[in-house]
Amino acid sequence: MELLRQRYLDRLRQLLDAPAITAVTGIRRAGKSVLLRQFAAALRDERQVVYVDKESFAFESLRTARDLIDHVASATRPGEQRVVIVDEVQQIADWERAVASLNGEDRTQVVISGSNATLLSAELATLIAGRYVTLQVFPLTLAEFGDLYRQRPGAAADDAELFRLYLRIGGLPGLLHTDLSDPVVDQMLADMVSTIAIRDVIRRHRIRDVALFEAIMRFAVDSIGSLVSAKRIADFLKSQRRRAAVDTVLNYLAHLGDAFLLTAVPRFDLQGRRLLQVNQKHYLGDIGLRNGIIGYRESDIGGILENLVFLELRRRGYTVTVGVAGSREIDFVAERRSRRLYVQVAYLLESPATIERELAAFAAVRDAYPRVLLSLDPHQPADLQGVRHQSLTDFLRGAPLEASAEV
Image 1 (cartoon, helix red, strand yellow):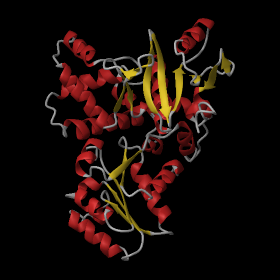
Image 2 (cartoon, one colour):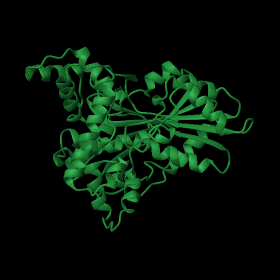
Image 3 (cartoon, one colour):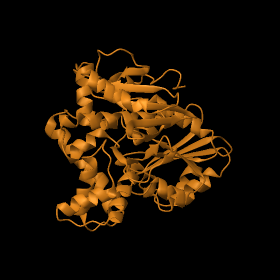
Image 4 (cartoon, one colour):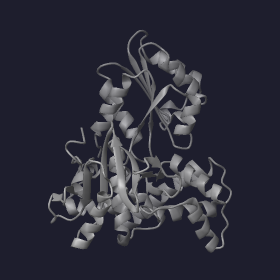
């Protein structure tokens, strides 16, 4: 079972034309290594490719920057176009010197990926500043999830069952290679969280009070879709007889963001046209990981759906904020290439009062940018008082939000 993620492959090809190192980033287990293997295979008929997978024992002898330089020289013909792809690059000592040197050579492009413990945006900016572009790999979309699921022997789930499974386990591809039983899935999700928390945060930042860190992580994860401030978390911990300075909370949340586990989404004052400094929302890099931390609760469906929409907007290249217009809040302000969309997310529109509440947020905005209301309700019309109503699951499967805006 293997899924060809053509959108990422096409983007990698585009980035080859840039005179910069391409750094493939993203949450652990999102499929970065498989993507790089597919990319190497796709390029071999048209140019020289050097593919190094430091997770493979075959490349165990490549330990230093000099080893990598010598390996590339011996594996390629001089003067011809070549692409050097190195997965888990952090396992090579002084790797930044090697990739910077290779990138400076004529007709040579370099693509790297690595664990979040060492290959983070902040670190890249220090080690190879000004010489790289990033490509973030996200977990599977709902459509990709269905495509991979259907490769399983005897797969028979319909679209509704697949969506329920997606809500339950998230979009990390490795889970679909298991028997999908609750004990196995729960254990794998818990292990993934542990790997991210311990290897990418606790060890890297030498956190001593692990219990405090875990308490802050659980609070933030349990609050997806809700406004959260560092002071609120600190006050809650104080009520539980645990002390945490606001600066400590802020640092721990930032570390979780660096590891792609949580993304902080600021609020944007649509009337004052400025980012607000207090109270952000946080969304997970994969919704399944929430279940590995606090378990799956159907009562939290509102926040879970918001999280899925947030990830899909980011996949599509939107910059996302939470909109504030007076006392009203719009779930997402999505901006891309000077275009803007206002997006509201609802579970079901079961009553006129619910519809009115969701539309009221849009009414507080005076500009003419498109407005979209996403819900799981199949019975409402496509137009609600000038607001486009759209199936949330169709959007997650790839349907455009608004024809004139998604170009």
